[in-house]
Length: 222
Image 1: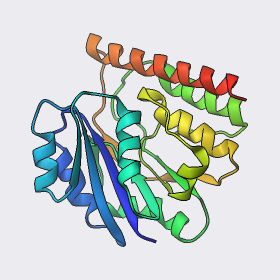
Image 2: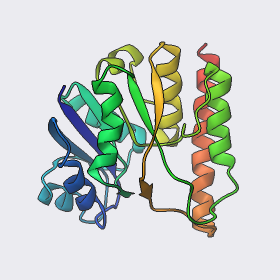
Image 3: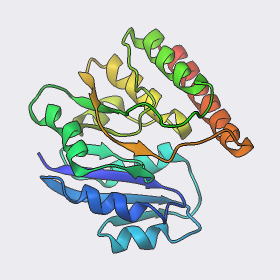
Image 4: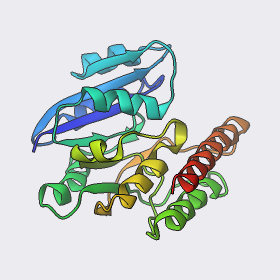
């Protein structure tokens, strides 16, 4: 099965090139698609220089919309989502792909090591975990993880990817409700950690809002 890697990116000129180059090392790669979601820096240029196919949104439309744009363009039988601020090795990406290639799972979700520094108060992660459990009866520690691999056929069954920062939680709930097999995979990945500045708390506030709205939509969709 060939693999399509989709990387949503907004003002990630400092790291997107690294993510593309590392992802190019995996086996059975068909394409890497970077969706530049209205960046005002050199994200698109850096991604293209590293060898990715770049699709650009003229205005910022949010992570969910960027991922959906990438999915419409992807041709691989397996699709991988990677964040543009990620630090990882190709071996960890192969760990995500292996259970799918072996027929042991339909989707894998990356479970990161414990954060090195104190960020928020865990409200966003707790909301995500409990939301998924209440909606599906399944427990996932890494429900919020943006690093995941899945069979392309699942998109046809689910139909859409939720908007905004609710994308990971909403997509996971939809997939579990459809009866697909999802497992968490321990990886040695990391991404840019937020601290406790006003800007960081504002970002987590937007995450919490989007995830809560996504959960409410899923609740009434039952």
